[in-house]
Length: 635
Image 1 (cartoon, rainbow, N blue to C red):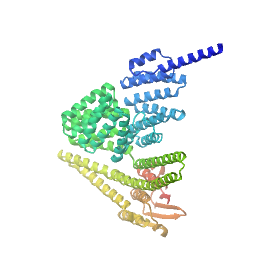
Image 2: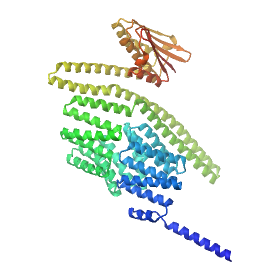
Image 3: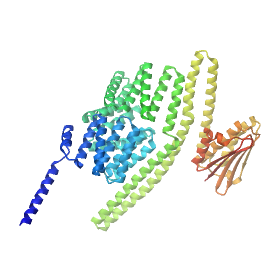
Image 4: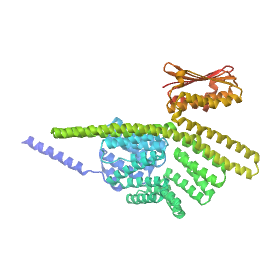
């Protein structure tokens, strides 16, 4: 009897403890959280309440307080061996650094959250959040290729695991922003629309404000100003519903641009001043830089060039400080346009050159091709996941219903889906090859011709200014430079057009082209030029990329020999040795120190082109002896 009473008493105590535990829940308001943290034991619920309170500090732009709370959270989480608390601590500090424009610091914290998700069982939702945050910061720092990899992986996890909601920032929005930077606006809009569908379903008003704002910005760039205004007004409405003041700054920036294009200067300036006030209040460094950039363009439109230059340089200073290459490029381009309008072509030209270098560093030709490949790989893997899901569903249904007719129908359906998938994958592969070729041609035209035309335009303006200032000698030098640039541009365009013509895919056409280029140069310098080839080489058909790179490597080698070798004889040899092809340019000139010229851009470009076709470039020379440039590659 005593034993029975003891058991009843024990269970009574246990049930009472459970009831108390069930009553302990983390409150919502800031004041209640403070009371909870003051009276509660330091357990798992305490860590959750501490994290929630720190997030409220981030939302209120009290970043120092948020960082201090996050540090306390990490210490307690480590003591309790609570991985979720450690994740929340790093996530908080990453967000705090991000909104202050400290991207490198934010990236370090977000990478720690990703490491935690890989080394512990925090779940797919935490991993999806960490991947998105890392991708977002890489994108903001200008590393778009790497950023895209992370956000596409985040989307893959969200769709594969069928997560009930997106955690943190939307990877769809970030992927759309990166595709938009590539000029792939249709792909960008597709991802934005997917993001809107998810956020509408979740009733995520903050998220809806963000995505509608981004769509409005994209449409404004496409000059669809009325549609852009509609999306931006929706964004503003959602932001007010969610009391999301930070996004209101971004919306103000985009509204400013649309008002400017609709020729509404009063609304433009009002939006910018409102945005500037909020950005300063919330310490939003990146957004403040964008506000200054827009204020510079506003004052330029009003012909107030001193104010315009002041605001643009303030914006540039901010973007240099936070390390945003993309936005530095925008500001240099804006400065270039302002100086052109002002008539200061020298400074316009200098800003154009810097903007061009930043653009090249953000998106090289190879980077674009790799991003296309990454995108197509992601889409293919997504299709494969859908096939696997169909197979799993088929297996479950066949277990529940053993009727052969239904089982056979499902098997037939799966077979049809598989056939369609195989066909689609082949289409994706062909599309990827087409995209890579298109991007290559576009990049060549952009790099070789676009920048030259910009330079010619600026130099022409500078020439007019020098003529007006009665400086004919300087003007004559500029005219010479324009003539040289124009000649090089025409030569480059001719090379590009010749390269992409499929009728020129034989080695014989390549020989003819090189002879046409080299013969006049050789005759003008009284140099004997000899081409030697094997019969089997002349009939060889070359892929476009190989043809282009071989041609440009040999052309550069010939050009260097004509300029510097002081030779009387130059031989060009094309030979086959087993499975290897050898192309050599040999001269009997004065030679050079290979190590001393190895850093020249011409030689660097030749080696880079050789690597693109899987080949090697050998340069053999000594001072006072003959020189040989040899390309080896396999097909």
